[in-house]
Amino acid sequence: MTVRADLNISLDGYATTTDQTPENPFGSDWGRLVDAYTATRTFRERVLHDASGDGTSGVDESYAQGYFAEVGAEIMGAGMFGLHNFPQDPDWRGWWGAEPPFRVPVFVLTHTQRPSLNMAGGTRFEFLSATPVDVLDLARAAAGGKDVRIGGGPTVVRDFLKAGLIDQFHVGITPILLGRGIRLWEDLRELESGYTVSSEVAESGIIHVTFTRSAQA
Image 1 (tube, rainbow, N blue to C red):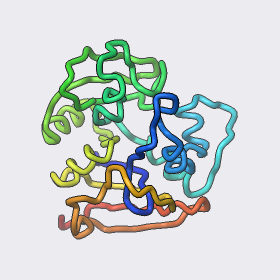
Image 2 (cartoon, rainbow, N blue to C red):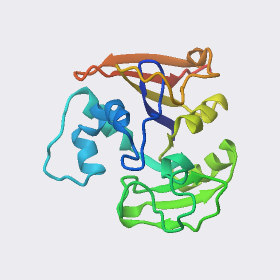
Image 3 (cartoon, one colour):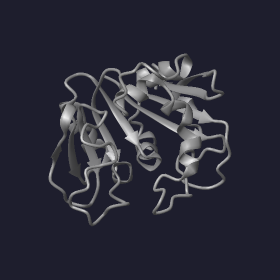
Image 4 (spheres, one colour):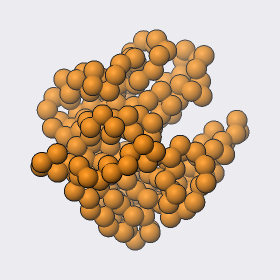
């Protein structure tokens, strides 16, 4: 069982965008940041439920396939679920519609008490306030021997990295400059020293960097 995380960041290291409006809650910059990922065949099938077979292949598609492969449980922050946008809405059920793409138990870190949500396709959202170590113990128990993915956002991923809890970390670096937002690499100096680092460039120009825990770490 591996504890892993995947994030998309800009060339200057930002993993969130800041141009959201009530009319456009994601903002145009988010589309620029994740465009290569959302264009893949796997994203279109898994997230958009598009069974046409349309979408890109190649290097980006291989990482999109890897994102979902062999995951038995997920951990995410309140922002990734959307609680920061809809904190007072008891009927808010996340960004992903009636059938989210996860299909596994998802542990949402939040100080807001909410009942569990059972969704179509096998996703179950559990809401709790816990330390990285404690929620990871719960996720491991729920994963049935498969991997646990730390889904995000960047603050949650950074907390798990700082605690030394992530075995494999993939970063898709999009060649754009955002200039502001939440910067992934803050307080992670010499992170690479505990990992073997590899990289490859996709046809889209995305730089895929993977940190894999070294045997001696």
